[in-house]
Image (cartoon, rainbow, N blue to C red):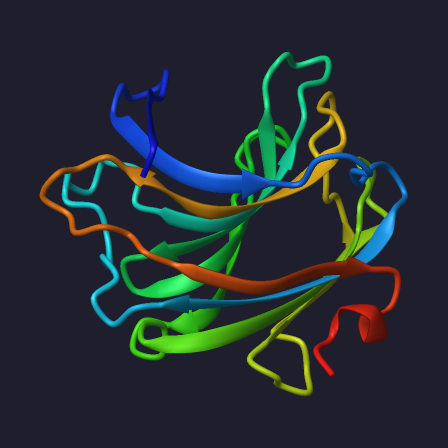
Length: 195
């Protein structure tokens, strides 16, 4: 981890080591396929240790939006490990009051010590005409297949893809090491799938 920051809402220090997409970002109406592989060692820290009120995620990949009218960077989707599973969270705060949605992708027992493959198909929109499909570990059917979905925050800018570790900075936790491979984006599934 190379950066520590404070979140305004709870003042808990966060640490992050991430890489981000630059240039040719995703915006209103764009439709893209994404694919990547990642590996977490068997001793990957399962959760935070600051109690149930703390932010319980170890984020590994994000689709983040640039600053717009809101003046803040806002996440659209977050792929993260929580205490009992690896999930995709449709980030809620600016979609509508009370909205919070996530989907389980990989069970806790299947998560560490293995390579995992994700394929994602998204139509980016601030309206309700978007869609989201996610395939995990070569399954023939998508784990997530949602239509009529708002996939971007209103008032925020274009979307960029980030990967790396973002979590609570707690010296009692071991290092959060993740290996990423073959991050790809394309207009068709064939463009992003490994040969």
